[in-house]
Amino acid sequence: MTALTVVRAGALTTVQDLGRPGHAHLGVPRSGALDQPAHRLANRLVGNPAAFATLETTVNGCAVRVDAAVTAAVTGAPCPVRVDGRPVAWGAPVRVPAGAVLDVGSARAGLRCHVAFGGGVAVPRVLGSRSRDLLSGLGPEPLADGMSLPLGAPCGPPLAADTVPWPGPPTAGLVLPVVLGPRDDWFVPEARRALAGGDFRVSAASNRIGLRTEGPSLERAREGELPSEGMVLGAVQVPPDGRPVVFLADHPTTGGYPVVGVVPEPSLAAAAQAVPGTPLRFVPVRA
Amino acid sequence: MSAPPEGLTGARALPVGRRALLVEVATAEQAQALHAELLRRRATGALPPVAEIVPAARTVLLDGLDDPHALAADFASWSIPPLTAADAAAVVLPVRYDGADLAEVAALWGVAEDEVPRIHSGLEFRVAFCGFAPGFGYLTGLPERLRVPRRSTPRTAVPAGSVGLAGPYTGVYPRSSPGGWQLIGRTDAALWDPGREPAALLAPGTRVRFEVFG
View 1 (cartoon, rainbow over the protein chains, first blue to last red):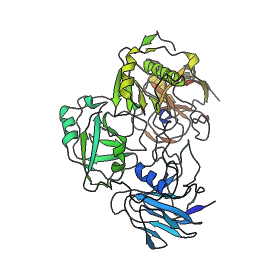
View 2: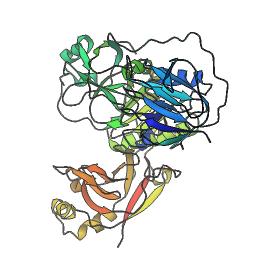
View 3: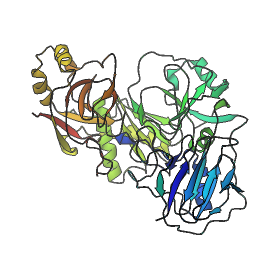
View 4: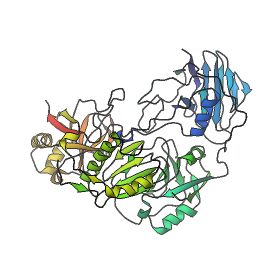
C-alpha cells in the first residue's frame, strides 16, 4: 500500500473529510473539513470523490514524502508548493514521483490549505469518518514528524479544471450573514444593534471549534442560565463575556449559552480562512 | 415513568438558521416524550428527512431540514403520547459506591454514608440527552430532594466510569476528563466505544438502573 511519511508536520495538520454528521445526539461533533469548497476541489483535482480524506494544514503548511508516485493538489489558502524543492502549481493536479517530498509552504493569505492525494488518506474510519475532531479527540491524531499515513488506491483520472471559481481568503474583511435567533430575545436591543453594526475582529483564540471575536460585547437582557440545548454549525453563541463565538466544525453538540443567531453554512469557509485581526462584520439576513 | 397523555401544549418551535428547528417544551418529561415521538415518526417515514435529532434539557433540535418553517407549523397538531417503559432499551450498570464525594452527598441527603448506594440503586433513570463528551448521558430520575449542587471547584481529572451527581442529573464519565460533578462511585462498564455498535451504551431514551457491586 502507498504511504506518506510526514517530514514537517506544520503548526497543526489534521486528516479531514466530510465529517461524521448523524451522531450529535450522542455528543459527537460533526467535525470535517473547515473549508469544505477547498476540500472538495482538492479531491476533484486528483480524481477523488468528495468524501475522500485530505490533509488540512494551518498557517505554515506541511511536508510529506510519498513512497510511490501519486497525484496531489493543494487548495484553500494560497501558498508556495514544491516537489523536491522545485516550485509546482497551487490549485492544480501535481505529479509527485516516488520518494519525492511535497512541501506545502506558509499561507500567503488565509489560514488553511487542503492537500488531496489520489486515493485519499486511508486511515481507519471512526463512526464513518476519518476526520480528526479536536473537541472530543475522535479520529486520527494530528500529524507529527515521522508519522506514516496510508493512501488508498487511485480511483479515477485527475480532473482537468482550467477555471475554478474561488472567492479567495477574506483579506480585506470578513462579512458574515447571520439569521437572528433562536435566543436573540436574551439580549438588550443595543446588543442586537451592536451585532448588526459593530466593528469586530477575528480573535487569535479562534480554532476548529469556533471563530472567536474581539470588539463589541453583547449585553444580556436577562439573568440566569439557559438549560442546555442542541447547537448547530454556524451558531453564534454568546458566553458570559459577551463576545460572540461562531461555531465551526468541531463545535460542542449542546450548550447552555444563548445563541443570538446562525451564520448559514456557505459562509463558514471564509470564516475558516480569516486570519486573526481580520475586520469582521455581521449582517442580519432573513431566514 | 408515566404521565397523563398530553399534547404539545405551550410548545414553541423556534427556527435556528435556515436548516434547523428548536422545539421548546415546558418540562424535561415533555422533551423526552417529544424525542421518543420524533424517533417513532422518523422510523415510520412520517417525518421529513432530517440529519440530526438532538434532545436536550427542555428542547429537541431538528437539524438538516429542507423546510423548517413547514415543520414548525405542523407541531401544533401533534399529540404526544407519554413515555412508557416499553419504548426504550434498558441497561443495568454495576457500581462500586466508593466515590470521593460519597460523604458529602450523604450529608446533603441527610443520610448515613452506607445508605447512599441503597437509595441511588433503588431509582429508575432515563437518559434525557447526551453532551459534554461522546457518550456522556444526562440521566433524569433523581427526586427533587436528592439533588445536589456541582462541586464549587471542578476536578482537573475525573476517572473513566465515575458515577456523579449534579442538579437534577446523574451521569457516568465515559472517559477520564475534567469535571465538577459529585462523585459517588465507579463502574467498569464501557460507556463509549466507537468501534462497537452502538458506540454509546447510554443513548437518549435508554432506561438505566444502577446495581450495588462489590
